[in-house]
Amino acid sequence: MISYNTKDWFTFITRFHKADTFRQLFPLILAISAYSGIIAWLELDYWKLSEKDYVRNIPVMHTLLGFAISMLLVFRTNTAYDRWWEGRKLWGSLVNNSRNLAMKLNTILPAEDNSQRSFFRKVIPAFAYALHNHLHKEQTRIELFEEEEHKHVFQRIDKGKHIPNQIALLMYQHIHQLLKEEKISGEQLLFLNSELQSFTDICGACERIKNTPIPFSYSVFIKKFIFFYIMTLPFGYVFQLGFYVVPVVAFIFYVLASLELIAEEIEDPFGGDSNDVPTVALAQNIHRHVTEII
Image 1 (cartoon, helix red, strand yellow):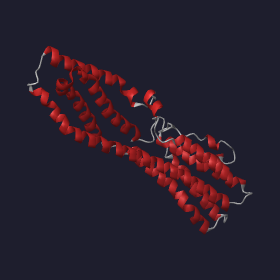
Image 2: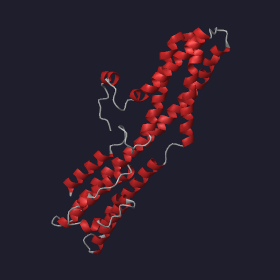
Image 3: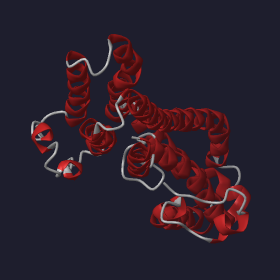
Image 4: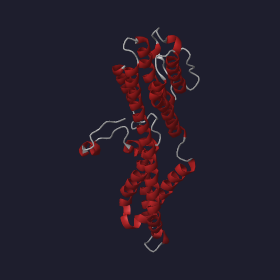
């Protein structure tokens, strides 16, 4: 995720970050400019169309459709941003619940019980790392568990199955074992249950966002709508603007296509784009904070 100063207008205008839509659209902007120039030359110099030709009335269509395309793009970007923000809130909840579970365990477990503290010091951040890798379709690394003390426990994790669920199950089994050994009471088990349950709830909600994209037909329709809207712009506006239609159409294309690109990028907050939720940094924060607490 990109960190920046929201008040630094000059930098935003003069610099082009790799995530800037202008850099991504630049080849298409050049193509649209060339296309608009050719249409202007054909109508003004080659065909020598006059203002009495019906083609000059095409802007009436753009006036009628302009409101529709603006509403579609607003809805598209709002929907995408809601998905991004929900993903960020879910990982914020994971950070808070991990801290809360660590603080509760720090209170419940005896200070001299280094074995149990070491287990939870590893397994709580392990869930965050596993969830990150699961959402990014990466292979989960188990390097947190290379120490001999708990290696036999984590060797039971099957990398071919749902790893976050397996790690959450390990926490449940371990705490249930503490209850059987009477190291914690039934009341203390209930005291810990809300944080334990929240892990799988957060995982399921993140999977819902990851695996349920914007409906295909809606996304395709917007792209086609933008394409035909832009491609028909030069035909009518060339009579009012002449060859100035080239920069005007290029700028309109840049604005409309940028909105669609932004929506595409943020609708999946767990991808590999520059503006996605910083799950690695959040997992590292969980690791650091849990280690400090327990």
